[in-house]
Length: 440
Image (cartoon, rainbow, N blue to C red; front, top):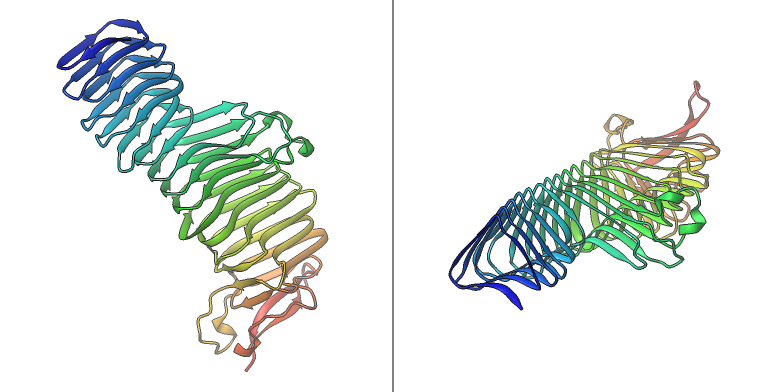
C-alpha cells in the first residue's frame, strides 16, 4: 500500500509521514518535499516524474529513494536513510544530490544515467554502471563482513574528485577475502582523493590472524587516470595502494602512498598492461616483506618518483620484477633494513631498464649520474641492483649497496651498444657504487 500517489503537482511541506510505501510520484507528477520527515517500512519515495527535496529526512527500509524517471530529480540539504539502498537510480534523467548525508547504499544502475553527488557524506556501498560524479564528499564504511567486498564498484564512467574515502572490515577469518576501497572495471578519473583501506585494525602486530586477506586502495581492470591521490592500506596478508590488472594504458600521477602493517605490502603492483607512476612518493614499512613496486607482467614505468621501503622484518625491495619489463626513468629509491634490494629481477622473463636511452652514446658526459638514484643499505645484505637471471638495460643513473651494488653475475644486457657497468668504491663511506661507462 502506498500512502500518497501523485499524478499532478504535490507539495509536502513540514509534514511527518509514516507508511509502508510513503510517496509514489508518477511520470506526469511533480513532487516537491520541504522540511519534512518521510519514513517507510518498504520504499519511502518512488519517483518516475520530477522530484525536488530540500531540508528533509527520507527513510526507507528497502529504498530511501527509488528513481526511475526521464525527468530531473534533486535532493539538497537532506538526509537519506536505508538499511539497504538509500538512493537507487535506473533512468536517463539527471539526478543531483548536494550537501546531503546518505546512510545506506548508492546504486546508479543504468548505462548512461547521470548522477552527481556533491559534498555531504555516504555511509554505505556505492555501485556505478552509468555516468556518476562524486566530489567533496566523505565516504566511510565500517563493517564486519565475512566475504570479499568492494566499497565502491565502477563499471561505467566515474569521475571522483576531492573525496575522503575510508573502508574498514573488522571480521577475523581465515579465508582469502579481498577488501577493496574502489574496484574499477570501467573508466575512472580520480583526482585529489584520500583512500584508506583497513582490515582487522585492532590486531595490527599479529600477522597470523589475518594472513589470508587482502586490502586494496584501487584495484583496476579498466581505464585508470589517477592524479594527486593519497593511499593508505594496512592490516592484512597483502596490502596494496594500486593494483593494475588492465591491458590498457593507465596513469597514476603525483600519488602519495603509505602501505604498512601487512604481511606483504605493495605500493603499486602491475599485473598486466601498463601503469605509469609519475612524480609520486611511495613508502612501505613495518611489514614482513615490503615492495615499493611489483611487476608481474606488462611494461610499467616509473618517472620522478621517490620510493622508500624500510623497517620490514624480512626483506625490502624498491622494485621487484617477476615478469615483464619495468622502466625506471628517473627518481630516487632508498631501501634500508636487514636484507634489502634496490631493484630485483627474479627470473629470465624479467627486464629492468634504468634511465632513458637517448641514442647518442658518445661519452660519459651523456650519462646522468644523478637519476635514477638507487641506494640499498642493509645490515646483512644491501644490493643496489640485482639482476640474477633477468636482464638489465642501464642508460642513466647511480646505484649503490652496503654489501654490493650488484652481484658478480649481474651485467648489462646491452653491451653491444658499447655500454658497461663499472663498480667503484666510495672512499668516504666504503660502499661500492656503480656507474655507466661508454666503451670507446
